[in-house]
Amino acid sequence: EVSLVESGGGLAQPGGSLRLSCTVSGLIFNDHNMNWVRQAPGKGLEWLSYITPSGSTIFYADSVKGRFTISRDSLKNTLYLQMNRLRAEDTAIYYCASESRLVGRNSHPFFCMDVWGKGTPVTVSS
Amino acid sequence: EIVLTQSPATLSVSPGERATLSCRASETLINYLAWYQKKPGQAPRLLIYDVSIRATGIPARFSGSGSGTDFTLTISSLEPEDFAVYYCVQRGNWPPGYFFGQGTKLEIK
Image 1 (tube, rainbow over the protein chains, first blue to last red):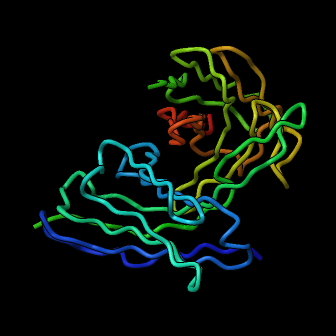
Image 2 (cartoon, one colour):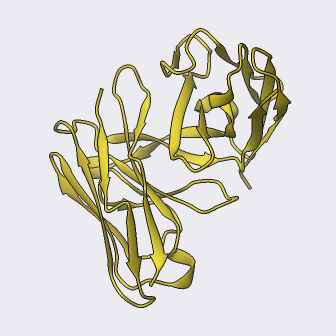
Image 3 (cartoon, rainbow over the protein chains, first blue to last red):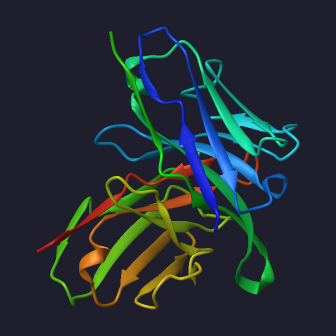
């Protein structure tokens, strides 16, 4: 069974740091691009970051660019999100999600996040 | 940047009835979109991808349609477990970020 389990969330002070982890099992970690997505209280889903299997291609949403760093360890089947210079507006549930290459209409490839973890909560407050 | 606008924000429907959720894009979508279901305390669940293909294990009462800038998620006969928030989302081709709609809350009437 495929499983993504996030950890590392908790309480941080404004300007502080946290490191989130996402441990993956049941799928070939190196076959999948990985993503971080968050949901702030009472808000919708917000994509944050993307990383390819080799780690050579990385992208960030503007809201976290320069503050958050995504990385992965293929030996540990683990995805990370280093969060620095935290702000109150970073308070959210943080989800990791694996992206799969599905077969779309007309047999074209369709990439989307098809497996998600249950999330880890992050609260930024003094 | 593509903006996805979902309507209505909240939809009240009785169990057994049909629900129709809308997602409008700010420009014609080249990479077609997907739909997710989100319940409190649970991970988002992929329902539909590439406009109309049901993901593995998704019941046939869920269907997607649309083209260009207008897309629809239809739930033909609502079951109690279907009451949740639904998001449409589009993946950018390059850079490969994801753009979510603001969500439609489907509540019991």
